[in-house]
Image 1 (cartoon, one colour):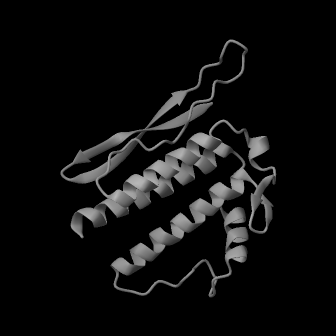
Image 2 (image 1 turned 30 degrees about the horizontal axis):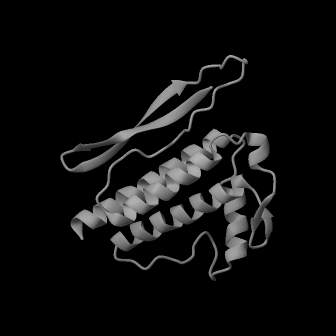
Image 3 (image 1 turned 30 degrees about the vertical axis):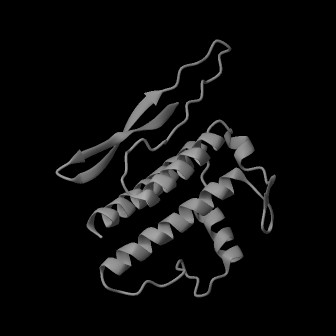
Length: 166
């Protein structure tokens, strides 16, 4: 079983780069896999918003890190439309993160993004949420966590770039 850990941010020629290390978890004395908090962001940032995003992202990742696949999908977490699951909460974060990245990229082309996107023409938050739950659902928690990491990493790159360049 491979677990991905982020390595500290590297700066080369002013450009931010993230890298990942792959390690294999070791079995503990009871023969079970020892879980390691995966996908934390260790990069340093100057932008106050990036610092807040990093703190909240890492906090959520640490909170759910040792919840197994079986329990991540149980609908026991209170939500706006009834109970939801840990997996759905992560999927929701991925979905909105990808929307922000898409809107940013379209804006760079001096175009107006279609909001909210993904075929939605109105702000149907419940419908969008259920769409995200299906679109970013994975069979393996590690796959979903990696997608969340990639999304958060890209948002942090954007925030830091905009802070540096104005």
